Image (tube, rainbow, N blue to C red):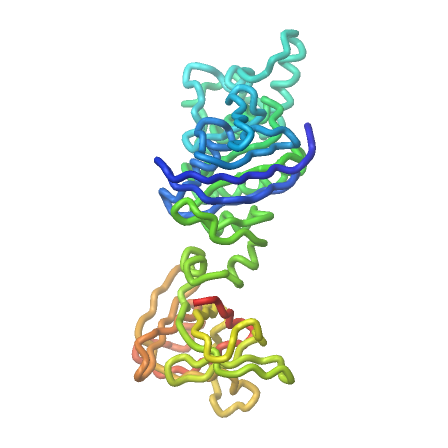
Length: 365
């Protein structure tokens, strides 16, 4: 299959707002994450040609599929895009083999059958070729949809929440298979989902979208730990997001200081923010550590003492919420449920925690 890069720039106001620009390399999975109605599916439909944005440009493997300035808008049939829809869109009266055979153009029956067998094997459906869709599990139907999409020999693969209709165990298997498949296909893969955990596992690049606008595109770890705004932090599931002010930069110690209510916190050196500037800041719950001995001078940075105001057990983990006097904000930390039960930690207990300085991330207000 062809190799190259894909460039997408979409802008639209009516009837759907879109404002997003990104590129995706061959052998790369570009994941778009956002809530329902944020425009994820519309982006895929725009790339495939099923929807025409007001303006922009779509270049896939060096082929210009859409350019509003040049009045180029290649038809759906001409665009070499494999599309896996959320509901799979399999033909219910056709077998697995027949569904996969639809995009195969070879007239020689022996070649067609050989190709169909290759695609069936590629998606781990060997022995199921004669079954109808209703005789398959959700995960098997998803594999058929993927096989049919790649049977077009596409220059790009578009996946619209393909794992949303399967159970968690099947989803884990399918995620692993998708990662293996990207190396075999070596084409750009654009995958949309609302599941952050799924996105982090498979994304080479992660895009956070809200109301049609791409808010941040970056390495998944950077998006999760270094969001560029409080909106992105919120959309990525961060609980500890606050407002503060820059009060000091110390180049010698490579530290910056922020004021949060009446508390001074040390964080990583951030001279790009001016003294006195109001900022938003966040700290992942994993960077909030309980201090067993508050008198230990080795753990005196960013010590906060408060009271446990809420506890929510989520399987092996427990979310602990901490409240402070004269501070309307609460702080959240994760603890293993085993530790909570062993030490009989309970709501109403006093607790001292430390915020790891390098874990505090400053964002523009």
